[in-house]
Image 1 (spheres, rainbow over the protein chains, first blue to last red):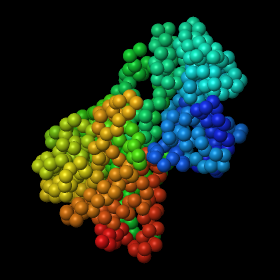
Image 2 (tube, rainbow over the protein chains, first blue to last red):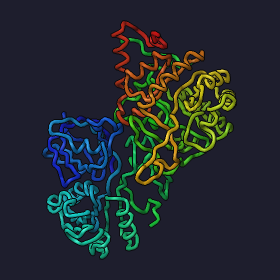
Image 3 (cartoon, chains in turn red, orange):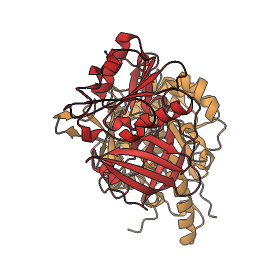
Image 4 (cartoon, each protein chain N blue to C red):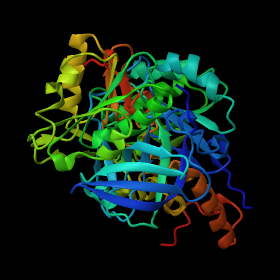
Length: 261
Length: 303
């Protein structure tokens, strides 16, 4: 994977789409110039405006790059004060963003990749699916959510490939968590790319290991700088001990991690 | 254009703006975003005799106007620095200063000895103030005898400019400052982080793996300014001010209080270009106030 140069750019909010009760899809245009090249799975560090009590930038996955419209898509979950301020941005407001950061997903050209997402973790899988499809591969999606209302951007995923669904309450798709879905338990794919809550990623990783399927997960360890300086977001690895999730990840092959699965 | 240069002992800095240890990696991480050669100095990550894995995750939590960290001096050791990092950064046109940490006096001395022959290491900063390690670190910096023993041992092992970084977690920082000066410090930097703690109320657990950690960011700035003001009056060696500096205005607070130079720390996490903007701000400030050099401002507080 190539090292993309980091940029700090001002963006104008062109659109803020409320998704469900807790999410916002922000479509942002650089105030001047073109979006820099970004890879699926990389992330951005967003300075939070209009937020009195927060201080640090917020790391947000790059959800999509729309080169024709010169738009960066960020999917934000209202989790705390900082992300709430981002969800409440108005069209026309300015947002300072550092990007692209970290290393993204491997683009496999052999065999099917199943993209497994949960909650706001579906964000980077949209861009990954799009890029895989552009490269002539056939991505397949397994998306989990609490309820039907928490399934995000389904129309966009449907344009890219087959979409399988699970919900915790059974309001859509298979009732239960993603690891209950036959597409995953059947084990017919060559690769898994996974992003979601930690218990989900661990369960998917355990299943992948059992079945001998190559699997990458995207971690969201708490971080301050996002660029390998503060050494706060470390994850223990088999080959190098503590490494920064922000620079060595956020995407890791599960074989590198010392997860007890 | 005013003359921005300042002297720290025998070390001449092109301007008073440096980056604080542990907040700027080895500088390379920021090279896409700023011209490193414009900085007065880069103080590289705390370096120890042997590699250290640091503390377990989680190591940070955001707090009002600041953050707590508990990194615990993760680094690959002084040999790795000398063999792999130094050759990559020694060509930079800025003062490369190495922060030296350890658990025992022998550790500090060993690192100083390894760095002593390196021409392009402009100075060492002896860290007797890390709050996140079980042995050494801050325990040396909280008593006069502890500070004196480390500093005098390092003085024998290092010929160049030696800065000693003080902890604010003491009753009277001026006593420790005087002890470090008497033991041979060429300059003092303060403050390191303030010992703090945050609790996840829902889980009823500490936010950090180590329970306590070091508080940094603008929330500590007024306390740091007060301590720099006190220490600058108590010693004859130059003082380097740090603690929650976010911009050029904040930097000038420390300089007016008596600091010869400043370090930007946590600010680098929020705005990686904060240092460069501050250099411009200080230059404009001097012009605006009809001054032509930074030393005219050092300790110029009207009180």
